[in-house]
Image 1 (cartoon, helix red, strand yellow):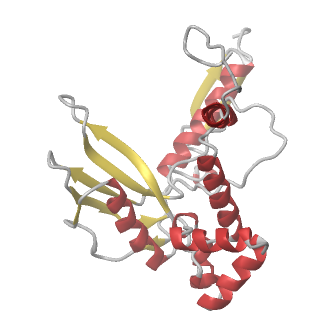
Image 2: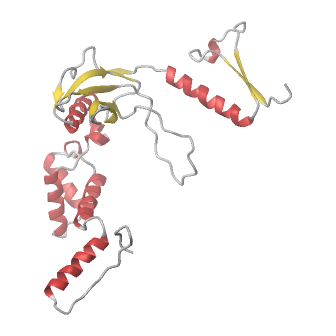
Image 3: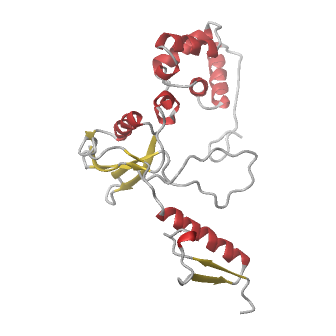
Length: 268
């Protein structure tokens, strides 16, 4: 026993510490190093966290989505996303399962945005940390995809272990925020006319009757404009520069340019 560094005494994972009787037999786990001891604590806390699931909100007694059919992956996401907005939670795409014979999708899950837990293992030092909203929620919908590509909802878990977002704050939910193409074109035109993006967004808010009806936040508009700019430069400055040289060579007889490529065909 001299080589044992530490020991931990715990009760049943499904019981609280105060509910363990003095005469009950605890589970004793002895380890022979501090690292193994720390790992045992982490694994034990994970098992307790996984077994403890308290439903705080139930979407309903019967599902509105079961047996509904859509034609592709995006429509299946939109179906669950529109349904989620009525209750006040966000969604994201979950796991898929593929067929062995042709690697096509046969199962697709759409999950609540608070599904799972943040992976805190092997995380180095960070100058900042984001707020972790995940609570291990188990709410999801599952679609079966036939060989024709038709998505059919075959499973729907409706119990959430967290509260829903209030109605006056639902326009902040990530999966419900989207800058539509016509909105982006309107902001781009005003920007080219010398009007700041912030003022353009204020005008749009006034037209639709406030931020809840706009459908996106100011940061989403800036990100959409940046994405359009990336598309306009063809994903890299070097490609744009080569196109510019080619145009000059076509219009100027005395203009010459050349580039050097490596064995893989990339610019040196």
